[in-house]
Image (cartoon, rainbow, N blue to C red; front, side):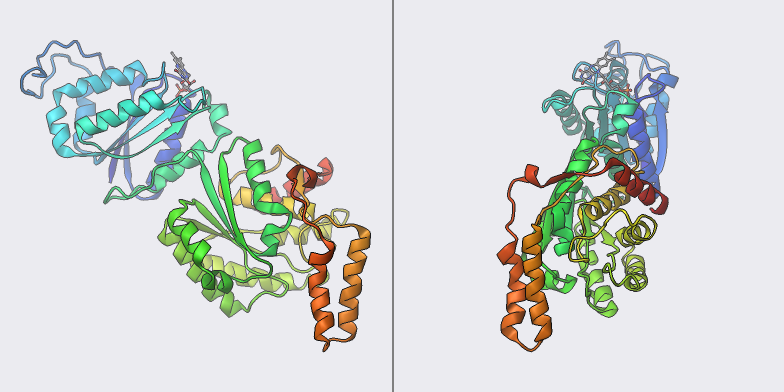
Amino acid sequence: MKIFVIKSSYHKESSSNYLADQFIKGARESGHEISEFDLKEHKVKPCTGCGYCGIYTVDSGKCSQKDDMDIVWNQMMSSDMVVFVTPLYFWGMAAQLKALVDRFCVFSTELKKKQMKSAMIVAAWNDDDWTMDSIEHHYETLCDYLHFQNQGTMLAKGCGTVEMTRNTVFPYEAYRFGKSLTDSGNNRRNPKNKLKVLFVGNSHTYYNDMPQLFKQICQDNGKNVEVQMIAEPGVPYSWHLEHYIDLRFALMHGEFDYMVMQQAAHPGPSKEDTLRDGETLAKFARKYGVVPLQVVPWAEQDKPEHQKEMYEIYEELAQKIQADLIPTGRIFECITKDHPEISMYYKDGEHASAYGTYAHTLCIYAAIFKEKVYGLKGAYSYESLPISEEAWEKIQETYQLSEQDPENEELRMAAYNSWDKYIVPVMDIEKLRVELDPDKARIICCTIDDQV
Ligand SMILES: Cc1cc2nc3c(=O)[nH]c(=O)nc-3n(C[C@H](O)[C@H](O)[C@H](O)COP(=O)(O)O)c2cc1C
């Protein structure tokens, strides 16, 4: 569709225009045609209230003033959607944009008949809950009066400068806003100030509270993110499709932006099962506007040769479902090979250590925000299953006993249950926090930036 974007900031480096450009980028990628009108390059005088247009009688379609408002009028009438872009000035739109809107009185009857789509993008310095209340209410009133089909607003609080804006989730949200526009219907969800990410996986997902670490690092770096996790020990995609209650509810009603999919590993299901179930899962997510992202798992510490097969499976799956890959397996492989001093594995040689989880988290961050991770704040992780040497030895003993007598069901169950017996979950997140060696954290960041 044809989208007419009206920018109003006089700043050369403008936060609101920066967001508008991200919106435009997304909209262009979705095939929409954009025309722009930048108020600092045009002359639009304020309405004098002379009544020549017939505002007090019947619209005449003519204005007594001669300026660039004709361009606006022509563009609006030949477009399907208008986007108002403004800095927040004293809790309302900038005066120059308000002046332009006031001049709508010349053609408000025509505008109402047109029932065009509209949106508004606002950048403000403050980030109080109520910062945008007045402008939002004003915009909604305009939409009602002018019969605009409101496609949503991008109310970017805490965006006082371009630099501040870059450090928030809003540029990305603006891009997604533009990208999500469709020609027909008013079917987009309300743009949220929060990015919502759903993690669907198994113990490799919940070890070290990885989704929480992701949320925390996002927050430390100015990104407003909410997370939810659906994971059980060792479960493959097929389990999620069978035990669909939580998954179904989350995808249909959770308004998630992304679903991070992590298949069981060590051992994982067959390639055939992974491709089939991964595709079903991704289709279900897309049906509800959730973008799937596929994790490349990491091989067991003592079986690095498994990694190659994992690349093959997950690259094929990603292509099939047209999803971006989260290349954690590749990062584990590179670090283990080039920096053996950084232990990426938990004691069992399968799950991630605090460093492994940090790497996994940053791979997800890079895949979602398409940003470099070197220099991000927050070089820490969690260790959600801390265990004493003594307890670890006891677990090992029960496994060794079971291996010596593999047919013995009692010993097998004892080994299986030894985890629950010896590991006591810690419920205090601050006690689980691990400060990482900054040099090692930097190596992980550089490796991710090189590979992603
Ligand atoms: C005259 C003026 C009034 C402003 N009023 C507000 C305000 O009411 N609330 C707020 O949060 N920021 C206010 N600001 C800050 C701007 O909204 C903020 O810096 C915005 O990012 C500027 O966007 P721009 O670079 O696109 O012009 C004001 C700035 C100016 C110059």
